[in-house]
Amino acid sequence: MSLDLAIRMTEIMLGFAFILQSIEHIYVGTKNDRILFSGRLGLSILLLAGLYTPYVCAGLVIITLVQLHRFQGPYNGGSDRMGILVLCALTLTYFLPSGRLQDMAFGYLAMQLILSYFISGWVKMVNPEWRNGQALQDVFAFSVYPVSDAVRGWSQCPRVMLIMSWAVIIFELAFPFLFLTTVTLYIGLAIAAAFHLANACLFGLNRFFWVWLAAYPSLIWLHDRLLGGV
Amino acid sequence: MKTALKTLCLLLPALVPSWRFFDRIAPSPRVEYTVLDNRPDNRPNNRPNNRNDTPSDWREFSPCPVRVSFLQMMMRMVWNPHRNEYLFVTSCAERFIQNPTDHSRDEIMARVKQATAKERLSKGQEEKYIQFRLMFVCRDDGHDDEGAVKPHLAYTSDVEPFGEES
Image (cartoon, rainbow over all chains, first blue to last red):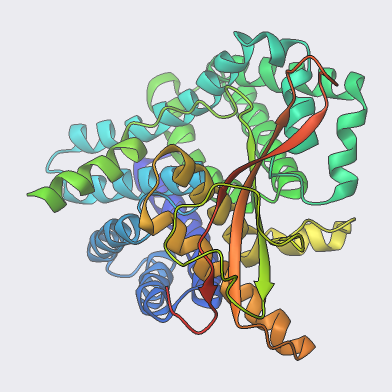
């Protein structure tokens, strides 16, 4: 995948993710939120359409900074942080002078995507409560995430929790190795997307799904750039 | 200068993320609220209060439903405003306990008021005051009933009139 195509795909996916987020903020937010996110919605539509993208990205970065002050941090934790990371990488590719620096900015995004899975897997691997299934059982039993009492009830199945824990740990730790060939990379990204879909369905983390997907083109581009044809 | 530094502090965790999702399962916040006809005489406003001596009719803010259908789950992939707002409110609760700020408390109060206002309007209720409290649910490591999941009271807000914008 060429850098131009990867950038264009990122713009489309990030624009779509930001449109969904902005409409939600306009719906539940205060009067000032509505003004701020109406601006963000307009710019996100332009990003999706591929119009004036350097200026649109710069505008979105400014709105993001205002948004960080407004909520004193991210509104939805990790998903907002990944959204900011994707946006900043995209913006840098437009404003950095040389091709090499642009590659580095977009490559940084791809590297962070790999780390997002690997570090998550590592911190679970070194925690005995994750290894014996207790941690995931606790996530289902009393964390804020399960979307319904029925989903919360899954905590009563310790064997299922143990299997799910190890499936997540193994996948997350294996993710960097899946990058090494084209076939395994696409399989890895499909599994990762399914993982985020499951998180969205069971835990209501829909924003993670769209924002993480927006970072995938950077990884496909980096793979082709470094290991093209493998 | 101060604003620039603050901006950098807010932005840096996004540019150099830690990615330590669920590294440990911390006590989990629940926001509960109660609506009152009168401000209790023995509880003047602005008094620090962390005691469980307030009215017994506490209701959970945005409780999760018994069941969510597959169709609803798919719809929520693209439209999930209340759930995402609820996650923001719980993150404000966590932030407030770690580092109490007016911002976190006011965000919780404003969103509880907003949600409750709709409910009161639909039921024709006319209570004048509202109060929220933060409960944290965790697995009990004590000797009695070890391993049971129990809520612990962490904070009770001041009583506020509904009409007052936070």
